[in-house]
Length: 294
Image 1 (cartoon, rainbow, N blue to C red):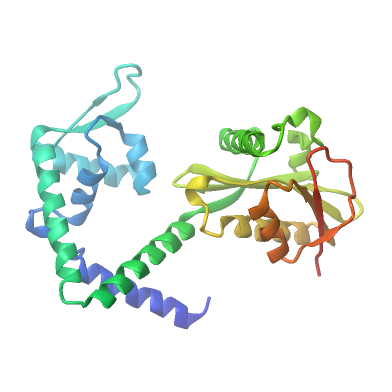
Image 2: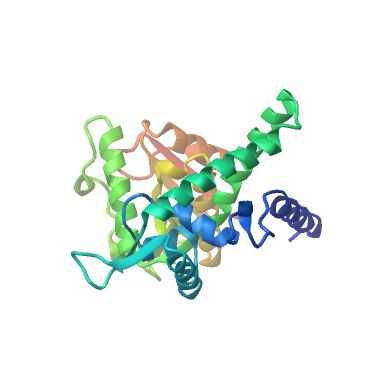
């Protein structure tokens, strides 16, 4: 990785942590560090499960337990068990916790105002626009792309969402039984593979390869959740599929798509795929693409 880029990131991190007060033992002068305050913000008004908190905040179980112990000692949260499943631990804010969270919201508004106040209107717009862009890129950097077994629950959810979206967008709907197959066995090594993209362990995208003995591979099951579109995740999945294809000796990638998927068509063209004559009899295809891999 370019050392200049790494140093820019580190410098940005130092500036932000200092400006927002992350270094203070008493964040926003409330007598507790940022970690405890952040946890109070994350706990909704209703009861929530501890495992969901761990996932959303990417916290170690031991650290989360220490944070909750401190908040319980201050009378701000109550930890219990789910009424329907005693194995599931839950947490909720007490009345004091709700009041503390409201005060933290007020103080956070004051902090944000103090950051914006010294700037003129143009600088404020530039800063907040840059913040929004940084947020999107940071979220993109937190997405993890891995090879998964097609029968794994997260993979199943992605493929089900893919099928549901095609059914809603294609003229006349989409029936997987009428489409060319991409069965589980075809998406497992050595026949193929399935990539799943996950954000905080929540599956948000997928893409697959069907490998052939002649050095040609087919791209299948390309899908990105609406919640993360605009983060270039589709391009990242396609790049990862190309990398895996090269590792398996593939010299040509092929795919077909429907005319309703205009953004997918733009993605493939932008990634170097060229439109070719139909190379299969896929019922739902209007465009066929091919890309040679050096």
